[in-house]
Amino acid sequence: MAVAAVGAQAAGNVWNDSFSKAKKTLERQVCHDHRVTLYCGAAFDEKKNVALPEGFMAPKHEKRAGKVEWEHVVPAENFGQAFPEWREGDAQCVDTKGKAFKGRKCAEKVNREYRLMQSDMYNLYPAIGAVNALRQNYNFQMLPGEEPDFGSCEMKIADRRAEPPVRARGQIARTYKYMADAYAPRYRMSRQQAQLMDAWDRMYPVDAWECTRAKRIEKLQGNENPFVKGPCRNAGMW
Image 1 (cartoon, rainbow, N blue to C red):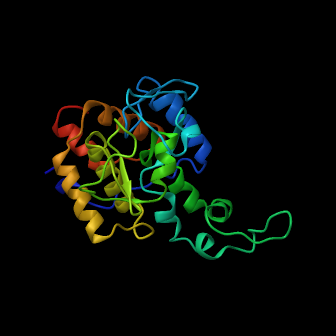
Image 2 (cartoon, one colour; image 1 turned 90 degrees about the horizontal axis):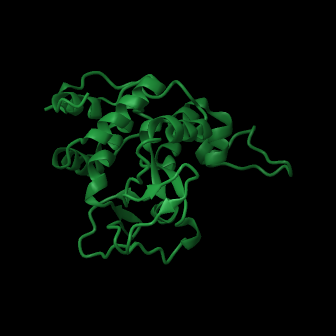
């Protein structure tokens, strides 16, 4: 019912266009007292060292398993493709050897609107580096019959799709819904993706940490995620 109360399009990030600053702000002012990764629930310290859960395995990207990284839950490529600089490049996107480039580096160099989307703290979550590496830019989907890729951490990745553990699904859903609302028409979910996120939003309600996180980001970034704020208020956690 809380989502139904969301009226006009939510505002996106207009506070900070530095990805580096966004990550530092999250580390120091949002997650400083709750250093826990999104997918696997692993603790990490102020130096980004991860205490891997018992039974965690990382047969690929093993070197990245010991550190936390800040992952775009809605992958940067999913909204980056909406920018011509990402798709085609730009006259300003030429390296020191005179070679033209495009993609993320070009969009980041040329387009402030892209940088603001890339730096939106609502879309950035701590993840074990090896999990972030294997997930890449894949969309979320249910993967029945697939085995977890990381042992005791129930993250599944197969056929360019990813199924997150139950503990992460509600936060993921409300992040996708926020991004699609705040940044339309630059970012849109497919009908299938929207249906899945609606289902996860209903099935996995907000908890105290999700509410605290959103409250802190709203204070710092200056805009709200109504898909979290509404349910948190209804639950008496705002």
